[in-house]
Amino acid sequence: MSISINGDEITFSEDLFIVSKTDTKGRITYGNDTFIEISGYEEEELIGAPHNILRHPDMPRAVFKILWDRVQAGDEIFAYVKNRAKDGKFYWVHAYVTPVFEVGSKKIIGYHSVRRSPSREGLKVIEPIYKQMLQAEKTGGMDASLKLLHQILSSQKVSYDKFILTYE
Image 1 (cartoon, one colour):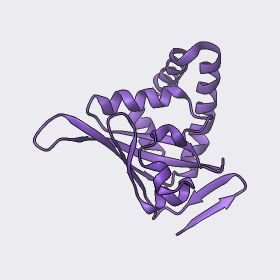
Image 2 (cartoon, helix red, strand yellow):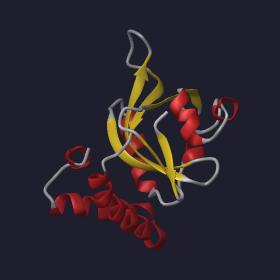
Image 3 (spheres, rainbow, N blue to C red):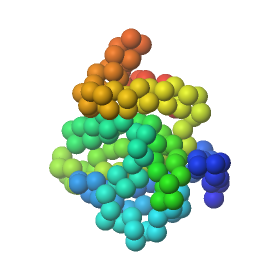
Image 4 (tube, rainbow, N blue to C red):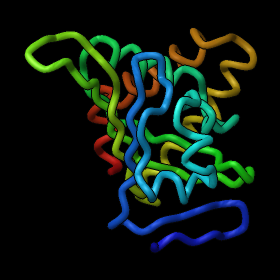
């Protein structure tokens, strides 16, 4: 596989896709080989574990609130996410997350995520925003972080989706 480690960062080539599925509670039900290798966990450690086992402390909780609100409402979402591997190293992904519906129904039975290597240009924009949001969370909670993000988007006259997809 085209995976490399530079210091504490794991990077992977644009032709690799990290795929996972979860149940409605966010517990992992499937992970492809790329997901398993990059995460550093054994498949047995991942299946049944909460997906937030990969949550990096540099990630604002507000980003996950937006993500969960969107997919639980039955919508798809794109997001930049910094994950933490089992050994403590980190890797950035550009994630696409979508609900999985019961056949012939609008009932959500799980979630499906496909992640790819993010653009370095996008990370140059996203990282400072996430740092600001994280600081806002530390001083004013998640509401302060969400407010900050909405102010940034409003100042640029762009929706969250348009903003994230601008830096694919």
